[in-house]
Length: 224
Image 1 (tube, rainbow, N blue to C red):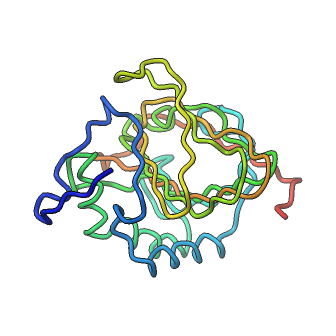
Image 2 (cartoon, rainbow, N blue to C red):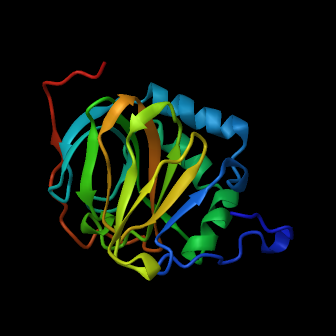
């Protein structure tokens, strides 16, 4: 994607997620400094992870998750690292960046979590809006690339690629944005480790309109 040259129009409302449901952004298109990327990576590394085998929309997974924000009832911070994560991903410059695909800077971080996948792990097909209909766009920041498998795969029922499977494999320090109404999954990791930070953005600050199922945690599987 080409950057606009005029600073005043850099983050105009450029993208319609109803027509182009999945977007990829290169590192130089994302207004995070190298220091902020490093800070986020360090926060993810020091986080504690649960092995999730079932999602809150009753989908099957095998993924290690550390949650910083969730909205089972209403959006809330979950641990001592939440404010540090929020300060970076919801800074004024990042809100301006999000405006190009959300249409506004007035955004709520309803959910935010690190996803760590190792050999044999996967994220089953689901729609983010099954967890909360207020989710609009999910931006996934990538922190690794030395792995095989682990494709972000969508079943896009919007736009020109209706009903076609699309596969994406962003490099480290890239970001993927997905329309939260679009079914997607992460295919099985064959080798290596895939580490991402997923931020679920919304224009709604209200309580969750659904009652998500409880996450299924594998209490007998220690992360190596």
